[in-house]
Image (tube, rainbow, N blue to C red; front, side, top):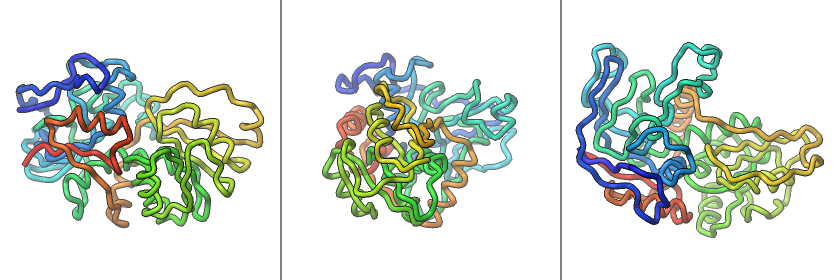
Length: 333
């Protein structure tokens, strides 16, 4: 099969992903083999490629927003059959036995594997995944449209839940890329007023099209105090900016896996029970709940499609905020 392989992390401008012809992965008893149709391009992929996340497997095939059809199933698999359309996401496998897994916090499992970081991902024609961690893709979404739902959508949904925002509340979204452009649709469905903070004029325009009440830059003050804020951009200084916008008791949820250092914070910004919290990975319950919500609305993803051969180009566009919505690689069939 053809895959885009990372052998050594490097700035994406140097085109570190190399096309390679490699064997189709073998599957174990509880796995399915997925013939990949499309794979979303995520900022986490960029962190892996550029080495901002420590290298856990080398070489590695990035990509964790995978949509395709089942080509083969292991002998232990009962959930799926050949030909079904499925998705694989960031959480590849957990131990199922530790305190975190046993208490509904499998996203924090110490032994977890992650698609496209610790195991090979979807920048390839085929990928292997445990059947219990694979999602059925709802009807109504084309393959490329569905791909961003599997990380941008799921992590945005978890971030909304952990921000503790309530219907009728005011929510700030910092950074308006793939995750935010999905999260705003859920938030508006929940009758939440959204304020979008982004430096890019095109992204501000998209935010307004999707129902934002106001847009501005990250350092700007919105016209109203906010009940919560979610930071999707990997910029630590935005934590201070977001705290300044909050009402008493408000929450800042940091949704990225990597962020630049957070500057010193004046305690008065935290006082009155304001909260900063991180959002780490996702549970399968998050995924199932979000995909049901996405189908019910339905979510409309804005995408820019690239062939697999242009994976470096897609990541470079993402790095430079040149993607309106989400970037997606078209890979097979």
